[in-house]
Image 1 (cartoon, helix red, strand yellow):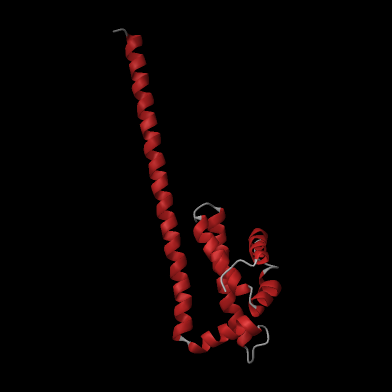
Image 2 (cartoon, rainbow, N blue to C red):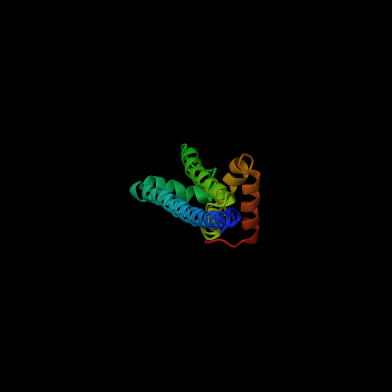
Amino acid sequence: MTIQDLGSIGELISSIATLATLIYLAKQLQANTKATQASNWHEITRDYARKNELLIVHPEINEIWREGLKNYPNLPNGENERFATIIANHGLQFQAIYAQYQNGVLEEEMYTAYLGFFCSLIAQEGGLYWWEESARPVDVPSMVAAVDAQLATGEYPN
């Protein structure tokens, strides 16, 4: 066997090793993506659960929330600010969900579910007033367009 033959065998082994390394890295990247998506799901659902707990533990906040969805900005005694803060928190969380979806770290199924949920909040009279007067002017334009498109379909939970 000549030195050229040994060099050719070395190149073949090197090519196989490079291919194996690339396959391994692709699998690691895939696993990391799935772990990131699972973590995002957990974080999003945990945050929504905390909001729901707040409404259960504090009936007066629950009442402001329910009344605000119907009658914002015509709530009595400074309750407008409390409602606006609660719904703004939902808006900020949806903006984070939208950004994760746009960056490819959140699956479409999860994004679509929360888009529908967010639209169900702002489709109500008080929520729509808040959306039009407070959120639309300052939120990310592409997110606003996505929400407006979903609102236009009328397809979201009641």
